[in-house]
Image (cartoon, rainbow, N blue to C red; front, top):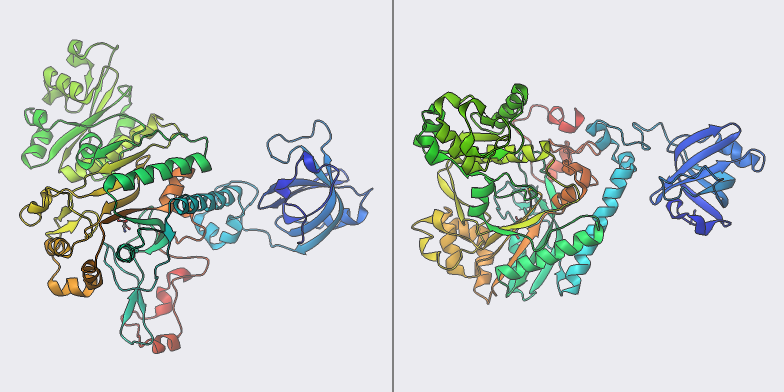
Length: 608
Ligand code: ASP
């Protein structure tokens, strides 16, 4: 080894030892004749002092050092002189007094500072990812991710799970998104697909008798880019035989609470994880991913609203929509400008508008409220009794502001839950050290797709309907509740799973409702259906996302910050310049021609 110890490992225990260090020049300072170098490696930073009197050669070499040069240093570990210790860094009690120094490699001036967490354009960070990953935050994230995955592996190994790799080149296994296709050279005109998830493979492993399977699996989905989506993401893919819903949830609860305790002991994870049905979650929080760190629950005001003189309310209800709202504590004093910001926010989340009702004045019972205390664009269309009723339904008191959205149920819920999260953030209602994990259960099996006028699977086609609902599969699909569950963390969906269908006839009924023809079913799912005829055990599982978990653990809102080499938001890899054109000879070998693109290179997103 070119070093005897890591910079970050140094401490008072090494005082008096002679060490060899190797790493990057993090910072350089001259103090009169002395040169101070902060030397960095993956473990941390150590201060090295070069004295021209005692080590003239090393001092001269250090005079050449520049930021990010790779250097090797010999020296003696000493306690820093009293008064010069740095309690802010772990190695702050000691320094290395250099006796020798050499340059292992020079560096060009880096495109941005490694030694400070300044804002840097993300494209530049991704282009120079190898420099970006040297920064403390990114390094810590890589280390944490390793610990998370290692913990998961050890935990599941101890409980008898087998880690099994499944192929990356498979056949198209539709799971709601578009496939990435890989042309076959040996079979011109034929394609492999990259797995959207190993769903069918893990079910086949259950038929194989594996009983407990997991994999840290890469999943590929060719979707239009969205905020926290990546073309490829990583899941903890997990499947178990002979289990019921409670068994899977109990395992996940233990895994996640033990995991957080092990890797982030300062975080608080309330246990047991609350469980609520999809119906309850939608009713109370207008979303199936509720952030349970704060209240501000929803009230359905539709009945009440339809009796008011307010056209907006009446129109929403008579048009088959809803009027819902919640109370934001202490916000009656919001200024016109703050309210306008919230209206714009609601509109940007798909609401037609936002009605606010501020209840001004000294705290007191709602029954004593007078109309003078009510500030709202809708005030003149509402009676005092109606305002009081709205206040009581939303739990608002004097001093609070009620936020109300009226319109079609789906868009109203989306806007209201976004508003609730926004108010939670504005009012700083969340404790950064609390990780609130919850299960949402009893999802509907099917969801009607208005645009395509057909039923879609709410989770996926392999999810089993709950007992007692089988008779509605064809006659009233919307009524069927599934053995399906989500894990939600701080308002983010961390993963979904279900108890699966393991019976060919039942699976065929579900496929039929989803609009697959018998030929489609045979072509796409034939292998699974046939396997079901050879002794398929009851089974179920889950697939929590690792990237999302990392985001919640580190409090980041950019998924790219928790992945070593991510794609940009427009699915481009600026480091390698992918996607990019390929040689004509490669296309020829694959019997492929690029058509309809004038100059393939000009459409190369990475060359922009
Ligand atoms: N395969 C599913 C998904 O990727 C998860 C599961 O049901 O286990 O969402």
